[in-house]
Image (cartoon, rainbow, N blue to C red; front, side, top):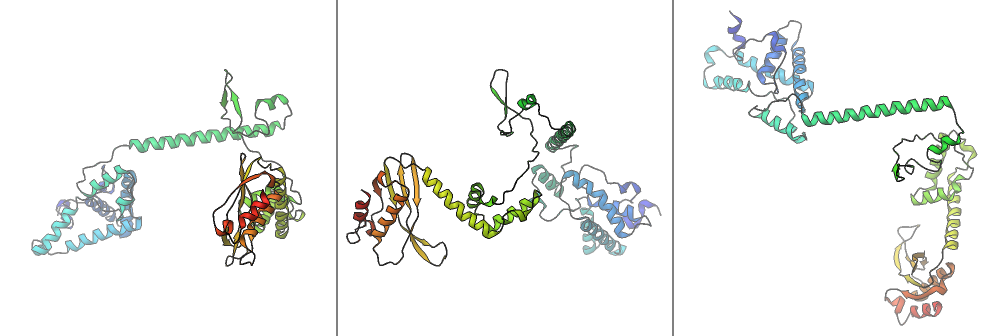
Length: 405
């Protein structure tokens, strides 16, 4: 019996050879190509069923990588190949006399028709996961008519990869030049030459603010890379009392405990001794209160009230600072003038007090105006027309009018 008439391969129409171990073409492999490749590997006595399937997967994967098509896992692909081989074996077991009947003949015809289709090695939602339009169109063609082919190179992809490689090369060259320059500086040691200092930016200037001059005298941005070499740090024992530290902590809502913890780590990171610095959270809290009062006092002393000012106020019922379940009346008081608007304070008014609201608002506003030394500069008032401000019984506006003007 010749190999061409071997009944084991009547479904394929050809006998697998060693050439079939290598899959060729410019499309994704068909079922016939995958099955012939598997049978060629399986014909070797040293290869088991799983080994032959793994070798076939290794021949198929380069096509999916070249086409940038998402594929199944190697283990799952091998299982699909073994499943295909099992279905072929089940058809080979059909007796010759029954291969032409309606049921078995239909199975054999369906298997032969499927041989020229693309072997499905992609996940179920592959089209949704692909982002490149060309890749989607190529895979859709592989699913249907198989007219599309893989070109020798993708112009867009090759251009992108070339640019990425150029950036990496340029970055590597910059890194090498910078490393060489650092080594030269270390070998030369520190220099006190004033001429060298005049060529670069001052110590107070940063790399962003340093500019060179063109021949015509116009400024030109310098693209010289400045290396940060670090600086020596001294930690005072009361560093947490620094106004800059307190302002930064308040603006970023850093609690005294968090501030003390961060400072402790920074002292250790700079080879310092945390035991020589006041870093307890209670100390940080006391420094915060003390420095906040000092800053507020300095702001009051340095602020200049407008020559002609208008005072604004409006009460608001809101949660207390210490208990969210309780509420209190807060009174924002502002003064506006030519220099802008200044918030004088937000004092709390007694809630559910027997005293009338109008006099309490007048008293609180008058106290703030005296604290900021701007009572004599007020020429007008702005408020809403509630009963506490203009009511005939509370007479709040009369009290304020008498006290302010």
